[in-house]
Amino acid sequence: MMEGDFKGAIYEGILEKNGQDKKSGAGQYFTPRALIQAIVEVVDPKIDETVADPLLPITKGKNVYKVLSIGFGNTGTPMVTIENGRETVCYKLPFEYSEWAMTVVGCVNMGEKLVPGEVVFSLENGKYYADIL
Image 1 (cartoon, rainbow, N blue to C red):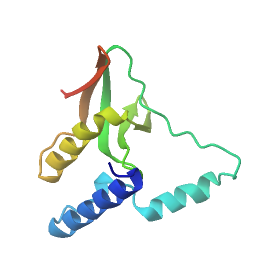
Image 2: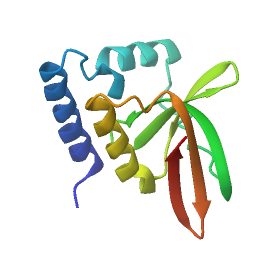
Image 3: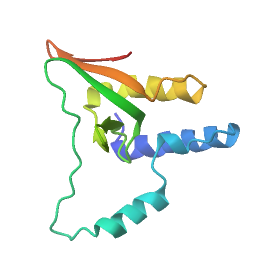
Image 4: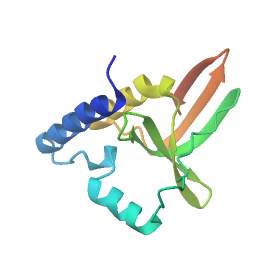
């Protein structure tokens, strides 16, 4: 077992190498450090404050979302950007979606056009499922 920060560092290294190998770059798969810094400066969190880092709401049955991007956070957490009406929200996914997210990111990196698109996330008998429509 590896710690999340270590896995995240490995994954970012792979994306950076792929970004150098392909003209499309890897920027669509992770948030650039400069953008993270800008967000921190704008939000200006205090040491005793909590910044929302929401988990995608997945209930029993089928949950259909318009997914704009799929990637990983700094700790290796799978994440999706969802278009929700007029706003765009970034959500963490349950860890159980890590393998699915890695597969989708790999396919996109090889040129497949999987996102943006509708994705059905479901929770059935304690197991998480995802299907791209």
